[in-house]
Length: 433
Image 1: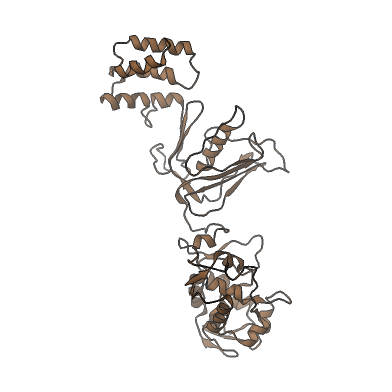
Image 2: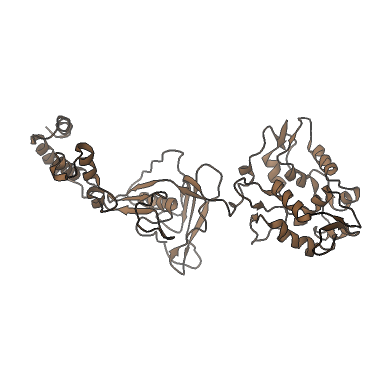
């Protein structure tokens, strides 16, 4: 068995009028007559047909909008009730001369002049590719290995009862394709997320969880123009001389992951009506997604916020150059006593707060160390207190201790009778003779 390939399906997504996406083929499948009406629930049939053929994302009830003349304001997705709202209006108003139908009555039929009326929705001297429509409607169907694309077209004509005059006046049965016969098929069924990769995420799909930074680009802001960062799968090492933008890249990565600045927002090179600074980023947990572009508003002098976040990052910890730590935790709200809509699950702890703690939020490294080692809450009664103070001075990020000061502190610790044997060994190795 074989299936239509992804490249063949993508080639078939040509714009056509909405009437050829559902209503016409629904009525043909039901063998609705010409010149008279029969009782038929078109809205219900259209709804079921659209759900089976155009509901591509299994996490969404929205319908992928294809087979129409797309304008600049057209959205990629149609609401789930499209069959009884927008499409119903097209059937009863825009295409009213195509059908026989009484208002507020479930009776339908094709008018005697339906072919001439349908031709009005096709560009002059053109016909609709029946092959492309068949590819879309049969995108998940399996076929025998000896089946060709021409066989699929013939199967479609027979299955939907397309007449000879309809083929002559409305449709083109030629294989309008630049793809070879072998490229048109693949051994496995195409995945739904492969089909919708070029499109926006449906409005009703919630953000995915535990996303990671996949792509970052900045234009009109930062020390490099443009700045493009494509992180590795697991670990990225960023090196370079001072002033090249390593810290800026980390600040920008933090913002992309959290949509919050750790301190001051990045400022554009210059404010101009002709140059719009922008940041493009992609946060994803592995599923296909499109990058988000955020622009700098020259009017408000602020960065716009993304309309919709497609993926929420997991826990993010940013160890900053000044010794402070920025933490983002979208799940744990312990950092804030407020539970309002404007709650931001991120917080920045200064260097002093990291060591000494912050009331009601964190204990601090010193208290955690003492309590963890000796189980005591009184830090000054802890035997490790003086040594933790010494290590804090040795390893504090700023200002850097001169080598002589490090040596003096090391020798002081060597003479301290309460220093452990392990501490004396480590410091002896680090001290000069």
